Amino acid sequence: MNVIQVLFWILSAMALVSALMVLLSKNPVHSVLWLVAVFFAISGHYILLNAQFIAIVNLIVYAGAIMVLFLFVIMLMNLNKDTEPQKNIWMKLAGAISAGCLLMILVSLIKQAPELQAKTAMMNEGGIGLIANLGKALFNTYVVPFEISSILFLSAMVGAVVIGKKD
Amino acid sequence: MNAIIFSVIGGVVMMFTGIITQQKKAIRNVAIIALIILLLANIFDTYGILSIHIGTHGMLNFQKFGLYFNTLAYAATLLFILISGADVTQIGEGKHAAEFFALIFFSLSGIAIITSYNSLLLLFLGIEIMSIPLYILTGGDKRNLKSNEASLKYFLMGSFSTGILLMGIALMYGAHGGFEISAMKPSAVSNEYGILDPLGLVLVFIAIAFKVSAAPFHFWTPDVYDGSPSVFTSFMATIIKAAGFIAFIRLFDNKYVELGLSWRIILPLVIIATLLVGNITAIFQQSVKRMMAYSSIAQAGFMLFAVFAENDMAKEGILIYTVAYSVATIGIFAVLEKMEDISLAGYNGLAKKHPLLAATNTIFLLSLTGIPLTAGFFAKYYMLLSVIKYGGSTVTWLVIVAVIFAAISAYYYFRVIQAMYFKTGNPEVRSYNKGFCFMLVILAAITILIGIFPTIILNWFYF
Image 1 (cartoon, chains in turn purple, brown):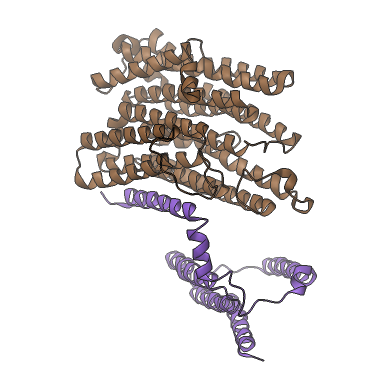
Image 2 (image 1 turned 180 degrees about the vertical axis):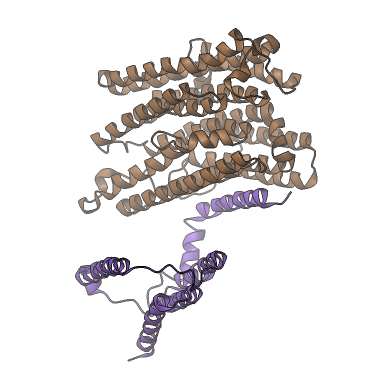
């Protein structure tokens, strides 16, 4: 077992435990924090697969922005144990069955997919996920759409100021 | 490329003008000058003089058709700002005049992109750049609850259609392995992924149909057009809507229509639904502004004929239709902006008190109906002729249906004329100056001139 495998098992265990804790913790704020931990573990996996860019974006966008948004919503709605609606047993059963079906489909798909059986994940090789390569594609082939999207953000910014400014 | 660059520079200049001065007249004059420069830059670009070339890796394909449409759209915007620019500066207590103009310029750069795109990536960016400023302009009157509601509705529905557009683009990318529409041949797709291509195209179709408010994706139109400030409704209903059709025509250009018979069934259904919803609902409206919203849906039905026929005649037709429809609608909304009461009863007796407003308004309404000697007649004529050229006797029924709906539309347009001339009332009109009257006469003159010589637009196209 080399370092990468050790890291893989640690990150996987971390991701699974955190994902379980998201479901099991009673306090919604704790759930969100555990979800952040899940994203960190998955980002670790991405780095092992030599995909720096996705790892960073996953952290910034999901763990950073979206989870903070989640926290804000939860705090605004003031959810705590007392207000949590008690779901009946049928709801739980229906949820378990539908989630179980999804799990079964995913597992059987992965087991049957011929593309996946021949290949293993690329470790320490393959440059497609590196930020340098992405930058080269972005500033050569896709430079026009890249620059044009700045117009989009500029107009969105002007709009935000017009709508949000107090007057 | 000139149009994109100069319109963005125009937008940035307007933003800085807002810092330097708060004088509304100065802001409006800067906007007019920037727009004239943009118009000239685009005309030069059309003939290859002083044009800026940037290697786009085939993502933008500047053709004469798209560039000429830009010229028409910018000229229409110039007319719009000349006649309604003063009203734009008044909206929202006049605190954001420069920003509104900046947003209009950004929207124009979106138009320049979607008239020349060759890559679906740029179609997406162009549609977004065109729409996002509109969401803001719709909510420009911040103190007005109806304006807020319209803005939120437009934004939510618009984001939803953006999601559909992206899904469609993703599916088409999956089928073809690239974004370039000129390289997309339905026959090149392997059977394994065969379903992805038409499915993606239908989703993209739905998203653009939403933007041009074709039924059954029109539900946002009446509320948004009714709620937003009248001047911005005028801009949205004319220039932006026409640009949506250019996006359509470019998408289905280069024989991409050879998808099969099914495509030829979807489009007539959408066209008839659009004509039906637009015309029939417009009859029951009491507010002229809301009636114009439904009328714009009905006109979109006619413009869809160009997408259906997809031949040279259709391209010429959509250019004439753009000018005819834009000029008439801008004129009607300019008059509407001056009315205190925008219900039908508010127009009662306008001819006695303000004969010029009533007379020009009548010409615009006649043009929208499609009466001969006005531009609207030739606009509809070219549309129907292009369909006949495409399909011959197999599409006669479609043409007959369209003509029947055009006749129905006369009813609600003529009701306004009837109110102005044959009813007595005391209409309250906001003060207007000589320049406004002059511009109204110019718009009416353009309408009649094109109605007599429709080829003056096309001569420039082939020049």
